[in-house]
Length: 255
Image 1: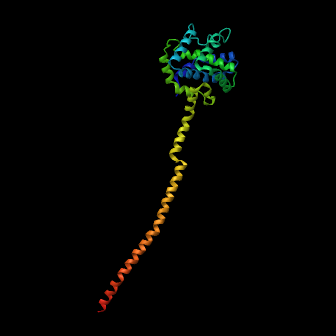
Image 2: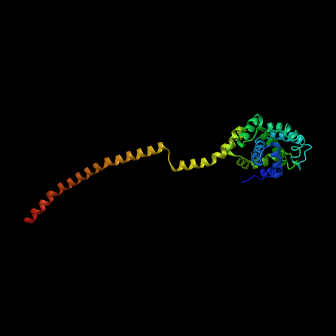
Image 3: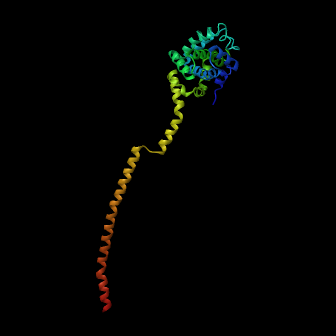
């Protein structure tokens, strides 16, 4: 199921914006699109992982940083002159560090390696994505309430996790992303394991079952000769008991 929040944020990245980002970062439009597919859900999940206090602090910083921000022209500052300064270089990097912590540099390394782009280009993609994310979660700066924003992020969590490529190696993003990655990759395998567990008993159970069946079978094979011997003795006794009566009857008939 696609995330309406994710689609809303990504809608800011029109073909024109993607082409401008490609020129600004010296990357192909295809790599820019792939990078946005990583940076946007990653930032949203990073915000979702914060507690109320942490999220409130980030939103306050964003509100102060974007006080004069034109949300109808999200990328206006990013493509300003000189290009890629102010929000995209210093302030946005500071906010992104607040979101991802000390792992942010390793995250950029992982993303640049995954996409095959320069580290500076990965940083530029995250820097360009942040204003779009803030515009999306605050409804263009009209709602800065941490509780309502947190609720929306939580509602979209599963879709955001699914949007990130599992081959990226989300452990680099921190324990929260690693747990999300394990959940996503472990769902199908757990179903297979459960099926195998119900259809094939463990080896020690199978061995014990065979041993018990063998021991029970051996017990019945021991009983069969005893039963036959008992039947033969009973039959022989019956024959011996009937002999004198038959001789007496023959004598009576002769007289």
